[in-house]
Image (cartoon, rainbow, N blue to C red; front, side, top):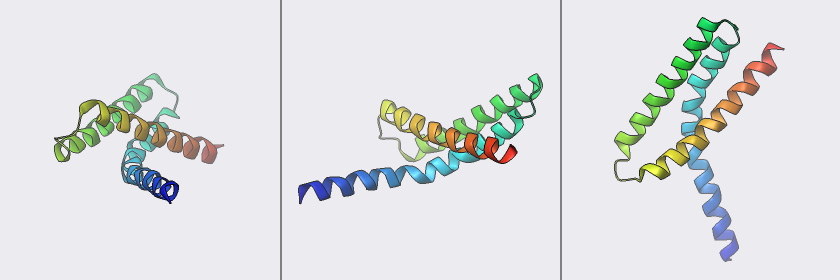
Length: 97
């Protein structure tokens, strides 16, 4: 019985990550589309979109969760950003080829 409760707790925590992964997906997708142009100016623009997009989402996250620890927030955000970047990479490069 305890194993089932643990499994449900793990699945619940994973499902809590999905909405922000989708929010991070939008700037990641835009950046990968711009990066695909392969010009140095476009690469700088893609980096700017990533920095502004991810920075804004993290800022809003900090506003609504002021009591959380910064290290935990950074770790969870980095996992969500990595997942969003992976999904955006797969989307852009699979559809473009």
